[in-house]
Amino acid sequence: MDKHDWKICIVGGGPAGVAAAMYLEKKGYKNYAILEKDDHLGGKCYSPVYNGKRYESGSIMGCDSYYAIHDMELFGGCTHDGPKLDREYKRANGKRYNPYSPKRFWQIPHLLKVKSQMKKLGELLKTKYVGYDVNGHRGVCLGKYDGDSPANEKREHISGTNPNLKDLALPFKQFCEMNGVPLVQEVYIGPYTSFGYGYFDEIPAAYVLKYLDMHTIMEFVNIRLWTWKEGTQSIFEKVNDKLTNKVRLNSDITKVVRKNDKVIVTVNGKQEEYDKIIVTAPLQFLPNYFDATADEKELFSKIDYERYDVLATTIKQGSYPHISCYLFDNMQRERMGRLMVFYHRWENEPDQIITTYTLRKHSGEKEIPYDTAKKNVLEDMSIIDTPVDKIIKEYKWYYFPHVLTKDYQDGWYEKVEAMQGKKNTYYAGEVMSFGDMEETCEYSREIVERFF
Picture 1 (cartoon, rainbow, N blue to C red):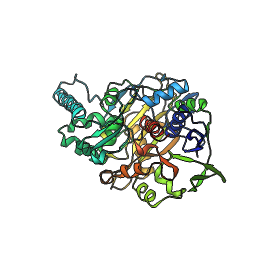
Picture 2 (tube, one colour; picture 1 turned 45 degrees about the vertical axis):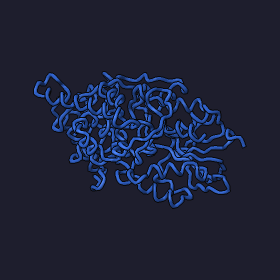
Picture 3 (spheres, rainbow, N blue to C red; picture 1 turned 135 degrees about the vertical axis):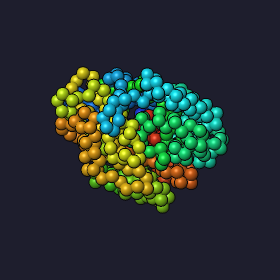
Picture 4 (spheres, rainbow, N blue to C red; picture 1 turned 180 degrees about the vertical axis):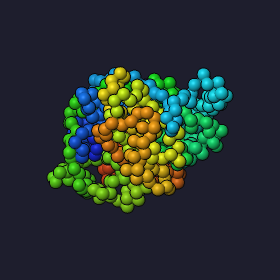
């Protein structure tokens, strides 16, 4: 059989699944199916409508280093035409301030130190940590890099040996202190912890730096960011519109059996036969419906994830904010379960959705109950003079699947990558790279390039 005739099942209609289908189609594969259990595609890139306008409940923004997302814009015929982003900062007590303002003369010495350490980190990443920013984690625990370079949209494949890359398995806080740049955490915390990706004393540096490579972090700092008028979900909707085979929504997969060189998928009570299967849905849950091997069960049981909650709210009349707001005080481990940021999307429109974001989990600590965190967020919104009128929708996301330092050092990624293609199965999705839409789509592109 010609490989282009393979019948391919893609599990999951989120960014990774839609991207996999697009890249397969661009290589001439047309015999695929995308099975999505929910009633909408896009996963956490979900942009519901309120009062005639779409708001964001998950992913919000991108930038010019989002090459896979740009591929999808071109394929789907859309562009980043959304509202301009801006932000302000408040203390936990509601007092407005600017942590980066040189006008506050007493801050200048500290800001100069931060700037100096950011410059030092940039040099270290270019020299000591060559290969740190390739997509995915293949080889890192062995002091190697093997993947596509993010230097430009061509993404040439590069590989090599660099023993220093083993440092990336350390928690980001430890990594920064070891390299004499502890203050850079003040720059990274906004687009990292507040976006739901955990705390720097627990998360391996690899995740932080592959998501926020030096170019990308500077785009976030300088607010040179992309948004989409119809929401991030519209990127994947537009791609889906152009695909030969659309995402099949409400597809409940209850069983996957791999035998006789075929993959038998039971979906909505009926069996379907495929030659290959690409899993972009959360791998932690794969053993629940797959004929999982002992290796699959063991490795995927080690996946941790964040409890990241979003409230879509309206604000009491006369109190609508004019801009998004960050609360750095609440991005610390000791303030877990408090409001970290709220997102204001449409300028000069008081009757709009304001979305709030909070984390309520740290590895090794007791998880904050959902209702407690919700109560805290509503209290914090009142403290910062943005009292909530109504909660329109609540989202408790399965967020940022990852492994912690020990499992990273012990070769978790090497072991999973070694299983790619066995039993006609390929593993993709957030955990294989990172939990933002660019990294997960870029990994799908690489899977297609490597194996198809």
